[in-house]
Image 1 (cartoon, rainbow, N blue to C red):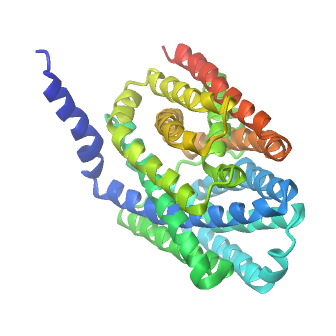
Image 2: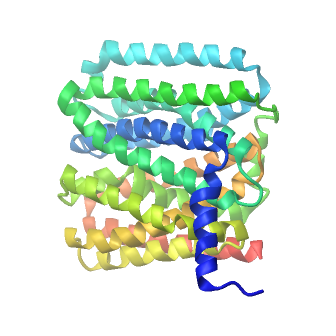
Length: 398
Protein backbone atom coordinates (compact mmCIF):
# COMPACT_ATOMS: atom_id res chain seq x y z
CA UNK A 1 0.00 0.00 0.00
CA UNK A 2 1.39 3.39 -1.02
CA UNK A 3 2.11 5.78 1.84
CA UNK A 4 0.65 9.29 1.80
CA UNK A 5 3.06 12.26 1.93
CA UNK A 6 1.94 12.91 5.52
CA UNK A 7 2.73 9.32 6.50
CA UNK A 8 6.18 9.55 4.90
CA UNK A 9 6.82 12.81 6.74
CA UNK A 10 5.75 11.21 10.03
CA UNK A 11 8.04 8.24 9.33
CA UNK A 12 11.01 10.57 8.72
CA UNK A 13 10.32 12.43 11.96
CA UNK A 14 10.07 9.14 13.87
CA UNK A 15 13.32 7.61 12.61
CA UNK A 16 15.12 10.96 12.82
CA UNK A 17 14.03 12.41 16.17
CA UNK A 18 12.45 9.61 18.23
CA UNK A 19 14.01 6.23 17.39
CA UNK A 20 17.65 7.26 18.12
CA UNK A 21 16.67 8.25 21.70
CA UNK A 22 14.82 5.04 22.56
CA UNK A 23 18.07 3.51 23.79
CA UNK A 24 19.22 4.73 27.23
CA UNK A 25 22.83 3.98 26.28
CA UNK A 26 22.71 5.97 23.05
CA UNK A 27 21.03 8.86 24.85
CA UNK A 28 23.95 9.04 27.31
CA UNK A 29 26.44 8.81 24.43
CA UNK A 30 24.76 11.88 22.90
CA UNK A 31 24.91 13.77 26.23
CA UNK A 32 28.60 12.91 26.62
CA UNK A 33 29.17 14.01 23.02
CA UNK A 34 27.74 17.46 23.77
CA UNK A 35 29.88 17.88 26.91
CA UNK A 36 33.08 16.45 25.43
CA UNK A 37 32.78 18.23 22.09
CA UNK A 38 32.12 21.48 23.95
CA UNK A 39 35.42 21.17 25.77
CA UNK A 40 37.34 20.07 22.65
CA UNK A 41 35.91 22.85 20.47
CA UNK A 42 36.42 25.52 23.12
CA UNK A 43 40.09 24.58 23.47
CA UNK A 44 40.59 24.34 19.68
CA UNK A 45 38.78 27.63 19.03
CA UNK A 46 40.81 29.48 21.68
CA UNK A 47 44.14 28.14 20.47
CA UNK A 48 43.61 28.55 16.70
CA UNK A 49 42.08 32.04 17.00
CA UNK A 50 45.03 33.12 19.18
CA UNK A 51 47.62 31.62 16.80
CA UNK A 52 46.30 33.56 13.79
CA UNK A 53 47.99 36.70 15.09
CA UNK A 54 51.41 34.98 15.27
CA UNK A 55 51.56 34.16 11.55
CA UNK A 56 51.49 31.05 9.35
CA UNK A 57 54.38 29.17 10.99
CA UNK A 58 52.63 28.99 14.35
CA UNK A 59 49.45 27.73 12.65
CA UNK A 60 51.37 25.16 10.60
CA UNK A 61 53.15 23.94 13.73
CA UNK A 62 49.86 23.55 15.55
CA UNK A 63 47.68 22.00 12.84
CA UNK A 64 50.21 19.81 11.00
CA UNK A 65 51.77 18.33 14.13
CA UNK A 66 48.32 17.95 15.72
CA UNK A 67 46.98 15.89 12.83
CA UNK A 68 50.21 13.93 12.39
CA UNK A 69 50.31 12.97 16.06
CA UNK A 70 46.59 12.52 16.68
CA UNK A 71 45.23 10.95 13.49
CA UNK A 72 48.22 9.08 12.12
CA UNK A 73 49.41 7.58 15.41
CA UNK A 74 47.95 8.44 18.82
CA UNK A 75 44.23 7.83 18.31
CA UNK A 76 44.80 4.66 16.21
CA UNK A 77 47.14 3.41 18.94
CA UNK A 78 44.54 4.10 21.65
CA UNK A 79 41.90 2.18 19.67
CA UNK A 80 44.34 -0.73 19.34
CA UNK A 81 45.40 -0.67 23.02
CA UNK A 82 41.81 -0.41 24.26
CA UNK A 83 40.94 -3.72 22.57
CA UNK A 84 44.18 -5.46 23.59
CA UNK A 85 44.57 -4.60 27.28
CA UNK A 86 42.32 -4.74 30.34
CA UNK A 87 40.72 -1.37 31.04
CA UNK A 88 42.54 -0.76 34.32
CA UNK A 89 45.92 -1.55 32.72
CA UNK A 90 45.07 0.82 29.89
CA UNK A 91 43.50 3.77 31.68
CA UNK A 92 45.98 4.24 34.57
CA UNK A 93 49.04 4.99 32.36
CA UNK A 94 46.82 7.21 30.20
CA UNK A 95 45.68 9.18 33.26
CA UNK A 96 49.31 9.65 34.36
CA UNK A 97 50.22 11.00 30.91
CA UNK A 98 47.26 13.42 31.04
CA UNK A 99 48.20 14.71 34.49
CA UNK A 100 51.83 15.17 33.40
CA UNK A 101 50.73 17.10 30.30
CA UNK A 102 48.42 19.35 32.32
CA UNK A 103 51.19 19.95 34.88
CA UNK A 104 53.64 20.85 32.11
CA UNK A 105 51.22 23.37 30.61
CA UNK A 106 50.35 24.98 33.97
CA UNK A 107 54.04 25.24 34.91
CA UNK A 108 55.21 26.79 31.65
CA UNK A 109 52.07 28.40 30.18
CA UNK A 110 53.54 31.93 30.23
CA UNK A 111 56.51 30.77 28.15
CA UNK A 112 54.43 28.58 25.79
CA UNK A 113 51.85 31.30 25.04
CA UNK A 114 54.36 34.12 24.43
CA UNK A 115 55.81 34.77 20.94
CA UNK A 116 54.40 31.50 19.60
CA UNK A 117 56.45 29.99 16.75
CA UNK A 118 56.33 26.65 14.90
CA UNK A 119 57.83 24.71 17.84
CA UNK A 120 55.48 26.20 20.45
CA UNK A 121 52.51 25.66 18.13
CA UNK A 122 53.55 22.01 17.82
CA UNK A 123 53.88 21.70 21.60
CA UNK A 124 50.39 23.14 22.06
CA UNK A 125 49.11 20.60 19.54
CA UNK A 126 50.63 17.62 21.39
CA UNK A 127 49.30 18.82 24.76
CA UNK A 128 45.85 19.40 23.26
CA UNK A 129 45.70 15.90 21.76
CA UNK A 130 46.88 14.19 24.95
CA UNK A 131 43.99 15.90 26.72
CA UNK A 132 41.29 15.26 24.12
CA UNK A 133 42.07 11.92 22.42
CA UNK A 134 40.54 9.81 25.21
CA UNK A 135 37.17 11.48 24.62
CA UNK A 136 37.27 10.59 20.91
CA UNK A 137 38.36 7.04 21.71
CA UNK A 138 35.37 6.37 23.98
CA UNK A 139 32.95 8.23 21.71
CA UNK A 140 33.87 6.12 18.69
CA UNK A 141 34.03 2.84 20.63
CA UNK A 142 30.62 3.29 22.26
CA UNK A 143 29.04 4.45 19.01
CA UNK A 144 30.19 1.15 17.49
CA UNK A 145 28.64 -0.71 20.42
CA UNK A 146 25.24 0.99 20.47
CA UNK A 147 24.49 1.63 16.77
CA UNK A 148 21.23 0.05 15.69
CA UNK A 149 21.24 -2.21 12.62
CA UNK A 150 18.15 -0.78 10.92
CA UNK A 151 18.54 2.94 11.70
CA UNK A 152 22.29 3.47 11.95
CA UNK A 153 22.16 6.50 9.65
CA UNK A 154 19.97 8.46 12.05
CA UNK A 155 21.94 7.25 15.09
CA UNK A 156 25.09 8.69 13.52
CA UNK A 157 23.28 11.84 12.34
CA UNK A 158 22.04 12.61 15.87
CA UNK A 159 25.51 11.91 17.29
CA UNK A 160 27.09 14.33 14.80
CA UNK A 161 24.43 16.91 15.65
CA UNK A 162 25.22 16.44 19.37
CA UNK A 163 28.90 17.01 18.64
CA UNK A 164 27.93 20.18 16.76
CA UNK A 165 25.77 21.48 19.61
CA UNK A 166 28.70 20.88 21.94
CA UNK A 167 30.98 22.76 19.55
CA UNK A 168 28.57 25.72 19.53
CA UNK A 169 28.37 25.81 23.32
CA UNK A 170 32.15 25.41 23.54
CA UNK A 171 32.87 28.28 21.15
CA UNK A 172 30.58 30.66 23.06
CA UNK A 173 31.61 29.48 26.53
CA UNK A 174 35.28 29.55 25.56
CA UNK A 175 35.12 33.24 24.71
CA UNK A 176 33.35 33.99 27.99
CA UNK A 177 35.83 31.89 30.00
CA UNK A 178 38.82 33.75 28.54
CA UNK A 179 37.27 37.09 29.50
CA UNK A 180 36.47 35.85 33.02
CA UNK A 181 39.47 33.65 33.85
CA UNK A 182 42.12 34.23 31.20
CA UNK A 183 43.40 31.85 28.54
CA UNK A 184 44.95 29.35 30.96
CA UNK A 185 41.89 29.23 33.21
CA UNK A 186 39.65 28.61 30.21
CA UNK A 187 41.77 25.64 29.10
CA UNK A 188 41.63 24.13 32.58
CA UNK A 189 37.81 24.36 32.50
CA UNK A 190 37.90 22.56 29.13
CA UNK A 191 39.90 19.75 30.74
CA UNK A 192 37.39 19.42 33.61
CA UNK A 193 34.44 19.19 31.19
CA UNK A 194 36.24 16.51 29.21
CA UNK A 195 36.66 14.45 32.38
CA UNK A 196 32.90 14.78 32.98
CA UNK A 197 32.19 13.30 29.52
CA UNK A 198 34.61 10.42 30.16
CA UNK A 199 32.87 9.67 33.49
CA UNK A 200 29.61 9.16 31.55
CA UNK A 201 31.39 6.72 29.26
CA UNK A 202 32.74 4.80 32.27
CA UNK A 203 29.20 4.60 33.65
CA UNK A 204 28.05 3.00 30.39
CA UNK A 205 30.93 0.52 30.38
CA UNK A 206 30.19 -0.39 34.01
CA UNK A 207 26.54 -1.11 33.11
CA UNK A 208 27.51 -3.45 30.31
CA UNK A 209 31.19 -4.32 29.81
CA UNK A 210 32.26 -4.08 26.19
CA UNK A 211 33.26 -7.20 24.31
CA UNK A 212 36.91 -6.90 23.30
CA UNK A 213 37.59 -7.09 19.56
CA UNK A 214 41.41 -7.21 19.32
CA UNK A 215 43.30 -6.63 16.10
CA UNK A 216 46.92 -6.11 15.04
CA UNK A 217 48.13 -2.50 15.11
CA UNK A 218 49.12 -2.36 11.42
CA UNK A 219 45.76 -3.83 10.37
CA UNK A 220 44.39 -0.28 10.55
CA UNK A 221 46.89 0.94 7.96
CA UNK A 222 46.26 -2.10 5.72
CA UNK A 223 42.49 -1.53 5.92
CA UNK A 224 42.89 1.78 4.05
CA UNK A 225 43.86 -0.16 0.92
CA UNK A 226 40.98 -2.66 1.15
CA UNK A 227 38.55 -0.12 -0.29
CA UNK A 228 40.35 2.69 -2.14
CA UNK A 229 37.17 4.57 -3.11
CA UNK A 230 35.96 4.68 0.50
CA UNK A 231 39.37 5.77 1.81
CA UNK A 232 39.85 8.41 -0.92
CA UNK A 233 36.45 9.93 -0.20
CA UNK A 234 37.24 10.03 3.52
CA UNK A 235 40.53 11.82 2.82
CA UNK A 236 38.84 14.45 0.62
CA UNK A 237 35.99 14.86 3.11
CA UNK A 238 38.48 15.40 5.95
CA UNK A 239 40.29 18.12 3.97
CA UNK A 240 36.95 19.89 3.47
CA UNK A 241 36.01 19.36 7.12
CA UNK A 242 39.29 20.99 8.21
CA UNK A 243 38.34 24.08 6.21
CA UNK A 244 34.88 24.53 7.75
CA UNK A 245 35.62 23.31 11.29
CA UNK A 246 39.21 23.58 12.54
CA UNK A 247 40.32 26.39 10.24
CA UNK A 248 37.06 28.37 10.12
CA UNK A 249 37.88 30.72 13.03
CA UNK A 250 41.18 31.60 11.34
CA UNK A 251 40.00 32.45 7.81
CA UNK A 252 36.87 34.18 9.16
CA UNK A 253 39.16 36.38 11.26
CA UNK A 254 41.27 37.02 8.15
CA UNK A 255 38.28 38.50 6.27
CA UNK A 256 37.48 40.71 9.26
CA UNK A 257 34.71 38.73 10.92
CA UNK A 258 34.23 39.52 14.62
CA UNK A 259 33.87 36.81 17.27
CA UNK A 260 30.13 37.65 17.61
CA UNK A 261 29.51 37.20 13.88
CA UNK A 262 31.53 33.98 13.93
CA UNK A 263 29.26 32.75 16.74
CA UNK A 264 26.17 33.55 14.63
CA UNK A 265 27.57 31.52 11.73
CA UNK A 266 28.27 28.56 14.07
CA UNK A 267 24.76 28.84 15.56
CA UNK A 268 23.28 28.78 12.05
CA UNK A 269 25.23 25.56 11.41
CA UNK A 270 23.52 23.85 14.37
CA UNK A 271 20.03 24.85 13.25
CA UNK A 272 20.63 23.68 9.67
CA UNK A 273 22.00 20.31 10.77
CA UNK A 274 19.06 19.79 13.11
CA UNK A 275 16.53 20.38 10.31
CA UNK A 276 18.43 18.21 7.81
CA UNK A 277 19.09 15.34 10.23
CA UNK A 278 16.14 12.99 9.38
CA UNK A 279 16.73 13.22 5.62
CA UNK A 280 20.46 12.63 6.04
CA UNK A 281 19.80 9.60 8.24
CA UNK A 282 17.23 8.18 5.83
CA UNK A 283 19.58 8.42 2.83
CA UNK A 284 22.50 7.02 4.84
CA UNK A 285 20.39 3.99 5.82
CA UNK A 286 19.99 3.26 2.09
CA UNK A 287 23.82 3.09 1.74
CA UNK A 288 23.82 4.14 -1.93
CA UNK A 289 26.23 7.08 -1.59
CA UNK A 290 23.56 9.67 -2.39
CA UNK A 291 24.16 11.64 0.81
CA UNK A 292 27.88 12.26 0.25
CA UNK A 293 27.35 13.35 -3.36
CA UNK A 294 24.56 15.75 -2.29
CA UNK A 295 26.81 17.06 0.48
CA UNK A 296 29.82 17.66 -1.76
CA UNK A 297 27.66 19.35 -4.41
CA UNK A 298 26.09 21.65 -1.81
CA UNK A 299 29.53 22.64 -0.48
CA UNK A 300 30.79 23.38 -3.98
CA UNK A 301 27.82 25.67 -4.69
CA UNK A 302 28.48 27.42 -1.37
CA UNK A 303 32.04 28.32 -2.44
CA UNK A 304 31.12 29.43 -5.97
CA UNK A 305 30.24 33.10 -5.13
CA UNK A 306 33.57 33.49 -3.29
CA UNK A 307 35.42 33.21 -6.58
CA UNK A 308 34.01 36.64 -7.46
CA UNK A 309 33.66 38.39 -4.08
CA UNK A 310 34.80 37.91 -0.47
CA UNK A 311 32.07 40.04 1.09
CA UNK A 312 30.90 39.07 4.57
CA UNK A 313 27.32 39.32 3.25
CA UNK A 314 27.94 36.05 1.39
CA UNK A 315 28.45 34.17 4.65
CA UNK A 316 24.75 33.64 5.38
CA UNK A 317 23.66 32.08 2.05
CA UNK A 318 26.96 30.23 1.67
CA UNK A 319 26.82 28.92 5.24
CA UNK A 320 23.44 27.34 4.56
CA UNK A 321 24.91 25.42 1.63
CA UNK A 322 28.18 24.61 3.44
CA UNK A 323 26.55 23.23 6.56
CA UNK A 324 23.82 21.29 4.78
CA UNK A 325 26.60 19.80 2.67
CA UNK A 326 28.83 19.18 5.66
CA UNK A 327 26.17 17.17 7.51
CA UNK A 328 25.23 15.07 4.47
CA UNK A 329 28.88 14.43 3.63
CA UNK A 330 30.03 13.76 7.20
CA UNK A 331 27.32 11.29 8.21
CA UNK A 332 27.50 9.40 4.93
CA UNK A 333 31.31 9.14 4.86
CA UNK A 334 31.75 7.99 8.45
CA UNK A 335 28.80 5.56 8.35
CA UNK A 336 30.73 3.26 5.99
CA UNK A 337 33.46 2.93 8.62
CA UNK A 338 31.12 2.49 11.60
CA UNK A 339 29.38 -0.37 9.78
CA UNK A 340 32.55 -2.45 10.25
CA UNK A 341 31.79 -2.34 14.02
CA UNK A 342 35.47 -2.55 14.93
CA UNK A 343 38.14 -0.20 16.21
CA UNK A 344 40.23 -1.35 13.25
CA UNK A 345 37.92 0.46 10.82
CA UNK A 346 37.62 3.58 12.98
CA UNK A 347 41.42 3.66 13.31
CA UNK A 348 41.73 3.44 9.51
CA UNK A 349 39.21 6.29 9.13
CA UNK A 350 41.24 8.41 11.56
CA UNK A 351 44.39 7.82 9.48
CA UNK A 352 42.46 8.96 6.39
CA UNK A 353 41.29 12.02 8.33
CA UNK A 354 44.89 12.80 9.22
CA UNK A 355 46.07 12.58 5.61
CA UNK A 356 43.26 14.87 4.44
CA UNK A 357 43.70 17.42 7.22
CA UNK A 358 47.50 17.60 6.91
CA UNK A 359 47.25 18.07 3.12
CA UNK A 360 44.67 20.84 3.55
CA UNK A 361 46.81 22.55 6.25
CA UNK A 362 49.94 22.58 4.09
CA UNK A 363 48.06 24.09 1.13
CA UNK A 364 45.46 26.41 2.66
CA UNK A 365 47.40 28.05 5.51
CA UNK A 366 50.16 29.54 3.30
CA UNK A 367 47.57 30.52 0.66
CA UNK A 368 45.51 32.46 3.19
CA UNK A 369 48.48 34.65 4.06
CA UNK A 370 49.69 34.91 0.45
CA UNK A 371 46.45 35.73 -1.40
CA UNK A 372 42.81 35.65 -0.33
CA UNK A 373 41.76 35.21 -3.96
CA UNK A 374 43.90 32.10 -4.40
CA UNK A 375 42.74 30.77 -1.03
CA UNK A 376 39.07 30.86 -2.06
CA UNK A 377 39.87 29.35 -5.47
CA UNK A 378 41.52 26.46 -3.60
CA UNK A 379 38.43 26.12 -1.35
CA UNK A 380 36.21 25.81 -4.43
CA UNK A 381 38.54 23.26 -6.04
CA UNK A 382 38.67 21.21 -2.85
CA UNK A 383 34.88 21.06 -2.63
CA UNK A 384 34.71 20.12 -6.33
CA UNK A 385 37.16 17.29 -5.69
CA UNK A 386 34.69 16.04 -3.07
CA UNK A 387 32.05 15.72 -5.81
CA UNK A 388 34.44 13.55 -7.85
CA UNK A 389 35.45 11.28 -4.93
CA UNK A 390 31.80 10.92 -3.81
CA UNK A 391 30.72 10.03 -7.34
CA UNK A 392 33.45 7.36 -7.53
CA UNK A 393 32.49 5.85 -4.15
CA UNK A 394 28.79 5.92 -5.10
CA UNK A 395 29.56 3.96 -8.24
CA UNK A 396 31.28 1.19 -6.27
CA UNK A 397 28.51 1.07 -3.67
CA UNK A 398 25.97 0.50 -6.41
